[in-house]
Length: 417
Image 1 (spheres, rainbow, N blue to C red):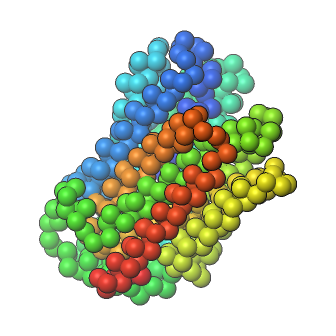
Image 2 (cartoon, rainbow, N blue to C red):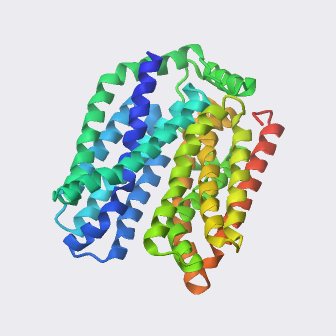
């Protein structure tokens, strides 16, 4: 049964990634059809991000009250309805309205599913599942392109993804007994997660927390209570910095190649896509590496590879080749960090607090992805695009410092370090 549920979760992760890249791939056509300026895509993206942040912060309360399976089912169904709404939207303002449930659904799935996998499955599954998200994010533009090439328009691209989300909703409905069975087993028996990291601290932390809370009604934590947990601020800033690096690197890679290295726009766009290829391939490889290295070590490896990539972006000669290799390395370095931070959360903070922590982690991630790319845009606009690697390096340095502070706090508190 556990393997069947894992298969459902893999499908859910692919489905989670499918809508994420649709807006960017469809917007040139959508903006023309709706009579909206190109820059207005940012408004839709911001509304989606705001909804995602809100639902991520509420995930602890919702999961404790309704259970992971029902939260997942409701969130995916909400996302399916929102995508259908996108396909039927007659104007830009309707898109903004429909973007609200779109974001709320996406955040609920993300936070609940990530925490569930962190508690119940080994680190390799977390890496491979996020690799599946990359597969979904890569398939989204192809599905949109299929609709556009057949003359069906962008609305059918959204409709195809909505249909796939409806199918997932049916699958999740049928799988509800599997979720309930796994949750009751943990609550009653104190099952520890599979630990491919061979970390006794991780297993003991989760097992003791589950045993201590068996038979108790666990109350959701308030934001002030979460922030007061030792190490919480460090992990939130770490997550903020990671997503700031990933989103800024991805958004401005093509512009950096064109404006700083003199590539033509088409070549730069294809090269920039290799950054995301690096993340997807890196997460597939990370799943195997977690069988040998624990989560903190994997995060350090990722940060080191990112540093190498950023340094290569600064190398002036031969600039274009070094920049290409640098982008790929930054993507490879990003690969293990996100899944390994999430997977190590129950070990650092206990399974009883992990959903609350993961929810705020997700919110921190979305804030970083929402705020930092536009900030660099302003900096580049008033100075130079050549500061791109310097900006990434500064954020990486803060990320490393916060992660090491988290590990130091964990050691002082007797946790997983």
